[in-house]
Image (cartoon, rainbow, N blue to C red; front, top):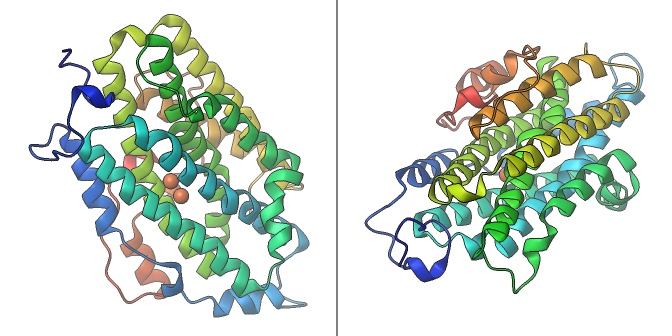
Length: 337
Ligand SMILES: [Fe+2]
Ligand SMILES: [Fe+2]
């Protein structure tokens, strides 16, 4: 029996014996998730509803409304895609029990995120068919989802097993597709746009919910990167030059798709955001993701939004907006953003 390969491959470990822990980092991420508990209904939406329906001075511009709709259209379905991948693909192959405990927690958080978009649609009186069909009929959103689905679809085969070098590579590609590209790159132009609006004190309920989602996603990303790095450490034969090159190329394609999405959502540049600044931010984020999974950074871009790291510190924001009474811990892992 090969004792090295223990985080995946059920036949080598007992998935029901959580103690003693083998991967303490998985427990840290689980505890961070539990400490960050929240639900969308705790965030009042009254001011958002008033601003969304306001006419005349101080109302939202058509471009601001479009930007909000684009992000609701992308996130509302991306959350379900991510949740489905955890349950239908990742959980089956990651047989280590403390990692599975974390995946159950992450699945719950994705359900909270899905619920957030239901709550926003209900509060603003949006047409659910319009919002929930955007991932199929808005080309810049569809291109992102199609890209992740194409990278990851082979492991959805019920007969797929992580028992060969090629199949472990396919599984790691799935983890990179969802944790690094979907949650680590494709969410971030949207976070920057929605949190820019929050910084202007507009749509503060949705903005606060995006803050909580960003904080959760920071932990999802950190878990995903630790999982990828552990699989590579335990199966070093998968980390070939060719495989690493494919990962880098996929991340480069993802940056291009995310910049195209931002150009589409922000046609004339609003709130001091334009496609150039979003491009710089996405390249900065991509470098951080590459380094986190032990690959060389490629862009050397600066960070145009240093406030994105600070915004994860919700204590500061809570005192500023005073929309919540519950004390929450900060999410940690601030260096991710
Ligand atoms: Fe999520
Ligand atoms: Fe997530």
